Image (cartoon, rainbow, N blue to C red):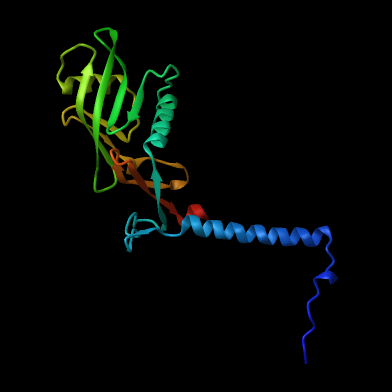
Length: 207
C-alpha cells in the first residue's frame, strides 16, 4: 500500500499555522546559538576543563585587542573615579602607559608611569613599572608609587605595592554579575595578543 503524497496546498495557511512554524524556527535558531556560545573551547587538542574545577560550568576564550581594552579600561576609570575631565588615562601600545595628576606638596603634579605586564600562573595580571616620573621632581620609584596609592581610590582587586614596586591586578577576584569567572590567558601587547578564559556556571545558564 502506497502512502498518500503530502500536499502542501491542502494545509490551511492561516495566521495561527504561520505563527507556530515561525516560533519553531526561532526555537531551533536559539538552541543552535546557545550550543555555539557554551561549546567548550580547546586549544591544540588540550581541553581547559581543569580550570575553575570548584564549580561546574562552560569555559571558552575571548580574544580582544589593545584598542578595545583601552576603551574598556578608560570607561571604567571614568566611572569608578568619576573622572569627567579625563584626569587619568591608560594607553596600551607596546606597554601600559598611565598618565594623570596627583596632589603632592599641596599642588597637582603630573604623573607618568610606564608598566610592563606579566601574566601569573593563576590567571592574574601584574604590572611592573619600568619608567616613572612625577613632574620634574627627582624621586625614587617607590615614593612615586606611594603618592599614587594614596591619591587613587582603587577596588579591592587592584593592589598598588610600593615596596615590591608593582601593581597587582587580581583578575580572578573580580566580582562579576551572574557569577562569571575570568582569568587572563595571554597579555602580549607587542603582538596584540590579548585573550581571557571565561567561565559561566551551569546555574547561570539555567542547567
